[in-house]
Image (cartoon, rainbow, N blue to C red; front, side, top):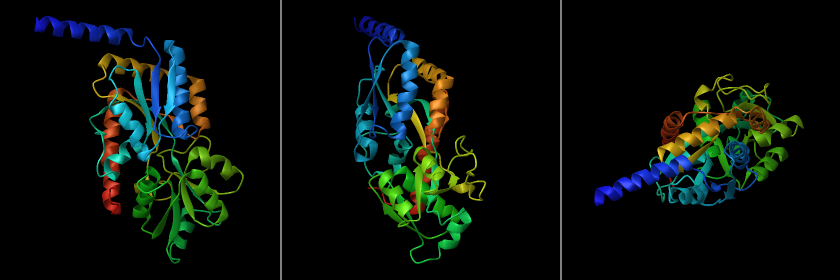
Length: 313
């Protein structure tokens, strides 16, 4: 009897995976609506919805450094109807939080990366190059830089930059990008790791200078801005990416289907163009490639936290 029941469950699970999706899919984003992570996720899953004929409904559940929304997905039924779209913050919290209500490595299945939307080292207009920044670091307090808060991915990037360049800097946390960039424009702080989406127009308008991008390659919409490797700071390279995840134990067939659809969506020209307009690049990967990438990112960010002396909260 027990064997028969178990066999029935396996058959039912396989059938459910094959018929997925039969209803709308909820996508949790642990950021506010309108953030680069939110917009990139909506762009991709809007196209995925067209491909499979089903709606993907986004819910913004910010709070607790993105861990509130991520915890909701970690604890959701692994049936393919609750997904997570998160940024590099997904892996950062593994080393910046002393205790999490979930395991970053074990409670999620990576589906695919969606976009690489790097940070841009944005400064006051008095700095014309990274050499100028390093030269100015001898002033009292060193370089004053803003972030979206202690332990954020932007904070870790700036710490990686400090460690690579070897200059003194003073951290000034802000509530958000708008507040920090306002202070850069006013000249009250020197530098901010701006998401490319926020840096492009301000740079074109001459309100800030963009001195380098954190990604391995230059951005299509900021082709004149060099990479950190090109300005002699390859060890400061830091990827700010957006990716999609499902709860652990989601059937393999559903993960494979989601991966195929996401990758196909990223190869649609309209989708790719919209991501490029955000200041990013499409980032398609197989599920296995993204899983390996995520695990490397967990380790990499852990190394930055340890080297910087940051104490997990």
